[in-house]
Amino acid sequence: MITAFHETDQLPMQAENIHGASTSKHQPPCSKVRIKRPILSAIGMSAAVAFMASMFLYNPYSPPELSLNKQVKPYTRAQGEELYPSLSPDLKTLVYVKKTKQLNALIIENVRTHSQQQLSIPLARFSRPRWSPDSAQLAFVMHTPQACGIYLVRLTHLHTQALWQKLSTCGSESKPGLAFSSDGKKLYFNDRTSEEAGYQVFQIDLTQGQKSIVNQPITNGRGNYAFDLSPDGNSLVMLNSEFGPKTRIYTLDLASSKLTQTAQLDYLMRSAIWHHDSQSLIHPAPHPAYELWQSTVQGDKLATVVSNTARVKHPARIGNGTDFTFVSYLLDRDIYLQRSSDNQTQPLANSSVMDYLPTIADTSSHYAFVSKRSTHAQVYLGDITQPLADPVPLTSSKASHRFYQLAFSPDGNRLLSLGDNQLLVTTITTLKTIQLPVTDIAIRGVSWHSDNQLLFSTTRNNRWQLVRFDLTTLEYETIFPEFMGGIYSKHDGAYYLLHRKTGQVFKHTESTSVTSALPLYCTTHLPNRRLTLQRGQNGLHCIKDDQSHVHLPMTVTDSVALPQQIDNTDYQFSAHGVIYTRLQRTTADIMRTLDAQ
Image 1 (cartoon, rainbow, N blue to C red):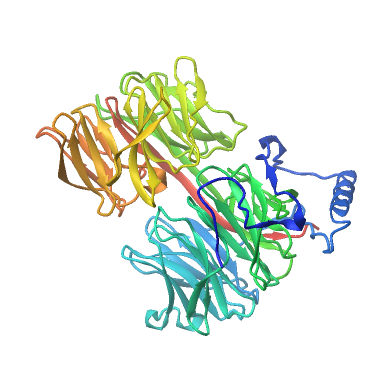
Image 2: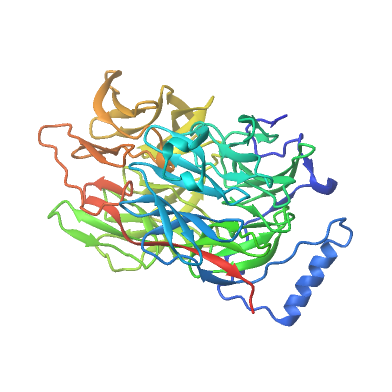
């Protein structure tokens, strides 16, 4: 049985609310409630305990066990990134993914001796390893350029690929989560078949080899993008979202297949796992998360489990009934301009944290970027003629936005910012920012068609299509339904369009209405909600699925010199040169909690 409803952020009538109460709506917690070094007085602790007792006075279940302000110690401290930790149920072996520029490997490490096994395959990317309940088998996800698969293997056969058991295929752009049942007879996972489809949760009967879908809300957008199985094996928790930065929390009783919506949050909860008590949840705080929180399934915060100086993600339970592992990570990117006048590199207003998504106006000296120097992601405005001057914030530090793309209008007077399916427009002269009334649709690959019109990709009937949005009438129209995205070039009065299956670029000339194929192939999807295709003064530029940069000259004199340390898609060609980000430092270490002594 599958609960289905249409594309909407209204509550589905099929799902019951817990205890018959109305579903709560929660605003994103204000940043000032985040405490970097929390100290609770005895009075404060007593008040918290009394409050919790009153909440559960008439509840037939015992109140959740609070995990307050745990100490933290590192499991790993090595070069590169260690991700997706999973400690074996017998507490002897840690498995995780090791990621460097040259390597993506599955690491199996003895926690006492620190001896390691390493599994790496050329061009393969591993993720989400999980132990079977008997600590003898591993399930994991492996992406290759050709396919995505979920595999099960005995630890003794890890290096013999012929003995791996392929449990299921998965979408090429999917990031499935995995969870074993407590008896080890079932594996739960979520998957999306394409960028247009939402995540759905499945179960595999490992004894029969049968795959089935569980009862869940079926929606557009992200779908059921995160889930977890409770330690007692009785319930699934699912996080569901469509297009906006909102989260619905559902629980599924596996015995009765009863689905219950417990909360609707006005922010996007990135992930969540069950606490050891099988009643409450452990999850990162709102983006950008420096804390792990314990919350009720209604979304009410119960406790700060961990307060960290670095950001946190990938929480997982340790099988001692008390503690958790998680990833503590830092990213530091700086912004540079490679000037077209002399090909020299100029650093811009950088900080010690993430500065990214740079864009620059062709008609002025203004540039814009996103930075987390205020802990929250904000859009900033700078001037390339004053590279050491403090940039001006254009968005509020109180809102927990996540940004994906910035772009100046052709005349340079306005800046467009794409958030979590939110479009913000800033007038440069007044520094006033407004949010456009575009909601409940997927938005990717934004650009300017003219000073008063936007282009972006959205979904119709599970297919990406290019639409034009008018800032005066606030209406949009589909203009190239057969292409998944595109840009308009004022250089030659033409659209450059991206084929949805092959990534081939087509040119549509407005004056003649002729569409012709070009010998240029870009990504076959819109990575991180961005269209990597650009039309600069020296031709077309984009990134392919293998992350390589490609250039198509439009005249015999067109040429381009990319910076040596350019950082993937974070760059833009302009009349001033190439503005781009450079990765300065990245670390991701696996940590574990301990009870405070």
